[in-house]
Image 1 (cartoon, rainbow, N blue to C red):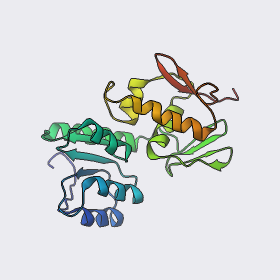
Image 2: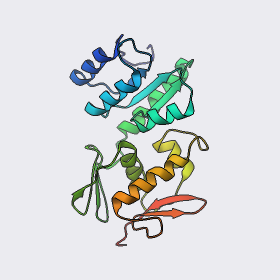
Image 3: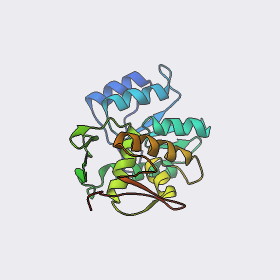
Length: 206
């Protein structure tokens, strides 16, 4: 790429998937327009075997499609046409997020235990079956334990979206997460909403 990166390319998706399995890389730039498999389907295959950050490169600028891809496991996206500088900035961002040494390997909040590297969570010793975005949301709130996190920050850090794009997805995921944590909005235990501002994760024992 001429910017200090070692780049490997693949002309089709299944060959790329085999390379990812055999030779893990730091980040994947995934073009949705592949000759052998739809890029959205390939994203699901990648997520089944790897947590390597994925940046979607697409000509599809439909907001619902972008949200669907982010919820399916993409870490960021770029709509064509884009410049090399834009791609470089997104690469730096996802590598910084995935490689930050400041993130603890394990987070404990009351009865919740998060294993960041393994992307697993338990509640009072029982495994929580979380989707990718539910885990991302919970771990982000855990990183900011006790602090009120704004909806715009959640959209930016968890969904990589500007505020105002589709913030209703936050409410949906929070509702699902609350159900799995055994609480409700009316009777919160861990997840507390601050009306008009955002939300925070608290240790109910403190």
